[in-house]
Image 1 (cartoon, rainbow, N blue to C red):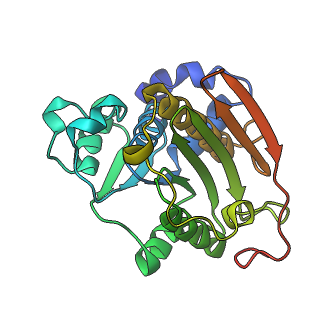
Image 2: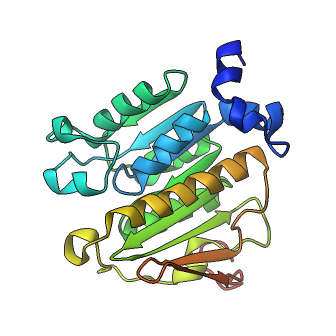
Image 3: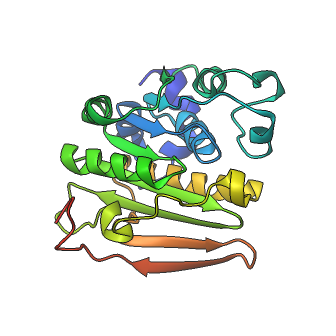
Length: 246
């Protein structure tokens, strides 16, 4: 790392668990973030600020006025822009040392598998089961860790699924067939800080996985009830009959 980078990340490097080796692991890492909405914005901003060397951000949507209540990488002037273009501008403003690759598309199938193969970790910041299941399949097939988050109304959840760990469940183990008609923020609403809280936890978990710091949420599901500001934790066993990882 250059002297300027050592100074920029000095408050992290001071942590004995992190040190220079942990920070270098972040600088050398490539992370794929799918979704530049309420979750993807804080995840990307914290990972950029923390020094993850290369962020690949994917989203095919454009910024709308209703997004600005919670999607903090976008501003009033971003309305009408592609979300990945708006986010890229803000991420580079936040940390010019970070490489950002913006993909203005809904990545799937072969393209998704190819992207997963190029990265060290995947962040699922999407908002529907179909995409989440596709991301999970690609991560299991590619042997890449997945940090999954979801938020709606005043509730949220975070989990880590690590295909490199023989005991780790996958997203399919948790939700089985899922519900293709799952609710979204546009139909159910969401409190702005909830996505910030969940996105921040996702960023923290990603840093822990990449830098090998602390104990990750692998095999555990963290649930937030923001109305009462209560956290619950559930253990997630691997399903031996799971069609994806079983």
